[in-house]
Amino acid sequence: MRNKNTLNIVVVLLVLVVMGCSCNKLQELTNKSSSTPSSSPSTSSSPSSTSSPSKSSDEKAALTLDKYNQIKNGMSYKEVVDIIGSEGTEISSSGEGKYKVESYKWDGGDFKWIFVTLMGGKVTAKTQSNLK
Image (cartoon, rainbow, N blue to C red; front, side, top):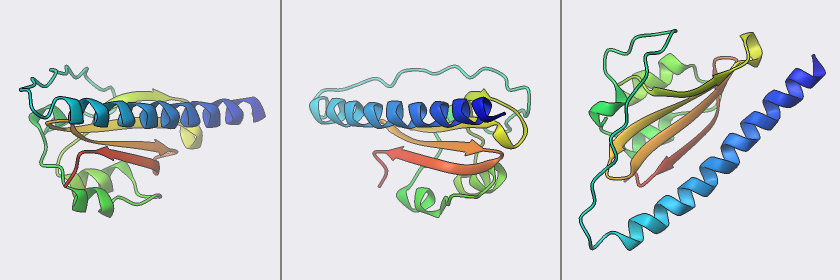
């Protein structure tokens, strides 16, 4: 049981490190490409076994810094969906029960996104890019 807890903690920390690195690279890319037209990459969402989103984040949700700031640690996925106004795209999921770690992304286009990590169904981490 202890090894499973350690593994989950390592996975969460690894996700956060990767997200931090990606965020810095995204900011550099945004600054470099602000004078040249860019096309946003298309993302395909795979069906989730736990829910079928009525509104996919691929529809370019209206993401704002105000919505991001309303998301607090301890909230459920449903509470986050209610704040943002659409379902997120599940990025990863591992473990089960109170040790289940899930990551969701909401894409707002133009390098705007919100990334939320939940453990045991509760928000444990969040990050954003380019929100105003």
